[in-house]
Image (cartoon, rainbow, N blue to C red):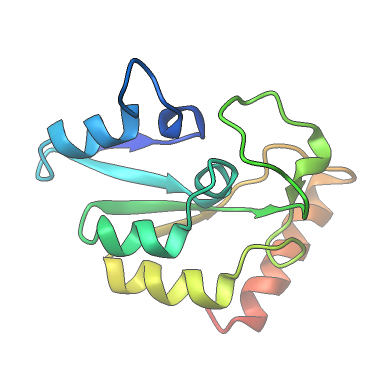
Length: 137
């Protein structure tokens, strides 16, 4: 059994002088707890998923893939408009950089996750799948 911690953006915001995510990285035993990185929420928090994947190499077992609308400011709360979420390849995140970085970091499982969809959820998944195919992933 492998435990994994799934991030949102609030862990990257300051709390009492520290960021919770930094405390987790420092205190979680890498052999016992891995990370389930959600690249959308990492980006919403103002972080670069590629940089974090490099810093956390060997510690990210799972990754959630979804894209982000342009113009979204750094935000540490989850109360985003449904329009903030985009299907893979239909937003501003650079999947051509993210996917190789994830492989290099040792990510084992990739999940397309769409918190909110504007239209039909099946069509949303289809669009993300097509983008992943174009990336030759």
